[in-house]
Length: 448
Image (cartoon, rainbow, N blue to C red; front, top):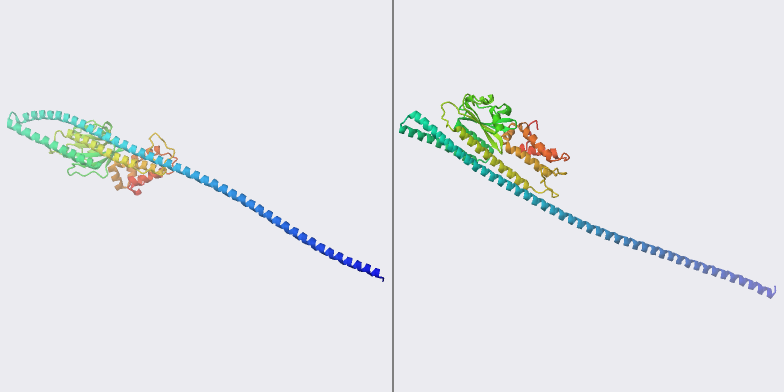
C-alpha cells in the first residue's frame, strides 16, 4: 500500500473518530440543555403554582375579614336591638306598676268613700232611730200613765212606784241594746255578729231563730231560747219558697209580723216545728248587706210567765239594722283587703298584668292573672258564705252545698277568661280546692 493510501486511511479513521467524538459531545450538550430546560420549566411551574396558592390564600383572607366585619356589625346591631327591647320592657313594667298603684289608690279611695257613706248612713240612722224612739217613748209614757191610772187609781204613791218600775225596765232595755251595739262593733267576724244578734233577740223576745240565705234555701244558723225543747236536726234548712212569711221578708226587705198566728202568712210548718209561733206574736226581721237580705231573724214572745218588754219588736228591729251595718262594714273591709292584695301582687314576666276592664276580652291571658281572678271570685264565696263553708268542710259537701254560688263564680270567670286559654278550667278548679276547700279536694264532695 502506498503512503498516500495509508495517509488517506489514517485521515478517514481520524475523521470518523472525531465525528463520533463530536456527536457524543453534541448529544451530551443537548441532554444538558434539555435537562436545564426541564429544570427551568419545573421551577416556572412551581413558581406559578405558588403564585396561584398565594393569590387564593389572599382571597380567602379577604373573604374572612369581610365575614368578620359583617358578623361584628350584625352582633353590634343585635346588641343595640336587645338593649332597646330591654329598655322598652323596663318602661312597660314601670308603667304597669304605676297602673297597679293607681288601681290600689282608686280602691282605697273607693273604700274611704264607702266608709264615709256608711258613717253618714249611720248618722242618719241614729237620727231616725232617736226620733222614732222619742215618739215611741212618748207613746209608751202616755200608755203607761193611762194603764197606771187605771190600775192604781188616784193614789200618787202607787203611781210614782209604778212609774219608777217602768223607768227601770226601760233603762234595762236601753242598757241591753247598748251592750249589743258595743258587742257588734267589736266583732271581728261575720259569725260573731250573727251570734250576737241571735242571743240578743232571745234575751228581749224570748225565742229566736236566725236563718242565713244561701241561694234558694234558708239555712238555720242558730236557735236560742228553746227552754228544754229538743234542738233542731243538724244541718237544718228550708227552701225559700216554702218558708212562708220569711219569703216575704227576703223579697221586700221589710219586717213582717204574725200577731198571734192569725196573719194571712203565718209561720211555715217547718218553723212551727222549731217551737216558733204556736199562737204567739211572731216577728221576722231582715238583715241586709248592701241592699240584699243575707239573713232573717225570727222571734216570738217565748213561753208563758216570761217578762217581755212591750217594745221588743222595735228593739229587735234596731238590733237587726245595726247588725246589717256591721256585716256591711266587715265585708267592705275584707273587700278592700282583697283589692290591696291584688294591687300588691307581683308583676308577671313580660310586664303584663290583669288590669283589664270588665268590658274587655283580652286576646291572651297569662296564668298568674287568671289565677288571681279565680282566687278573687272564690274568696268572695267564702266571704259571703262563711258559715256554709265551715259546715261544708265539716260535712265534705262544699260543691253541692254552695253549688249556686260556685256556678255563678265560674260563669263570671269564663266571661273574663277566653275559652281559647288552655289552662282556664284547670286554674279555676285548682283555686276552688285551694281557697274554698283549704287544699283538700275531698271536702268538695262527689259533685266537685
